[in-house]
Length: 339
Ligand code: 13P
Image 1: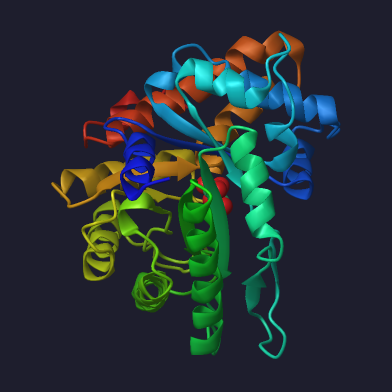
Image 2: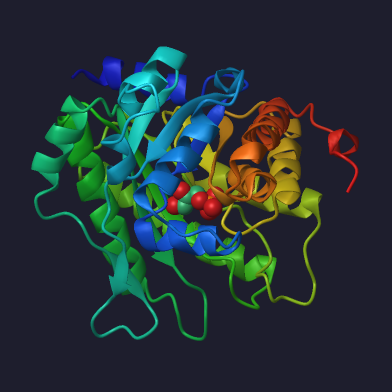
């Protein structure tokens, strides 16, 4: 596939007013989400839950693509249509998570390396046959005493770039996701310093691996205070620091940046994206690729009960709409339903 074709898919993924739903929770992760609503994680419960989201009325107006887990890519909607075709018919691009998770990095206590490169070429070819047009690989960088190390950052950047090059060879747009976690007690300045180092290393490796920047999407964390930091930076401060960090590191050839939510509340994730788009215009689209921040209210409203199917869909549609508005900076907190 040519770079122009990859670029067309990448641009569709971050089309104006739209963003991506990350619904690619691995089996252990979706079990954790279902535990919150005391629902057993059976194959059919996972299938029904994902169908509830995909079938939410009107959602294709704001959702350009969905990242699926391997199991979901091979499942079908209740009418028998395989999910990739089902999404395609709605005008939503199917994508696939291809990494095999972050594992301890030998010799570097507290740091991880994402696995999944062996056999990836064959898996990508199969995923393309099954209908996937983009993929995701997540590198995880934790902030703590003496971590991340320069080696940990560079090993993860190297793996991200190898993955991205293989995706493009297979005609699949890579979502390159280097996630700096927000779990610690660090302040926003430390997050900015680490995110700068991570993005610098990531783009060095992408260039070294001859990845076409026009045919990829970056999925970074926002520059934000650690969850346990006593002083939480304001929405405006997060927006300014994040845009500053991206401007310093992301070449203009990259069509779009689609943020992860990383444990932010649904409302915070929308407010931050909105504030960043208000600082525009930017050389790239600033969009979303949220998992928890799109799904949490839907999961809660549904609660695993068939009679709440419509309520779950409504909750999801609302988050999709509000994030769609945040794409142009036209969201307002007053649009949130009363608590
Ligand atoms: P969150 O938005 O919940 O961080 O999930 C996005 C994602 O795909 C993480 O890899």
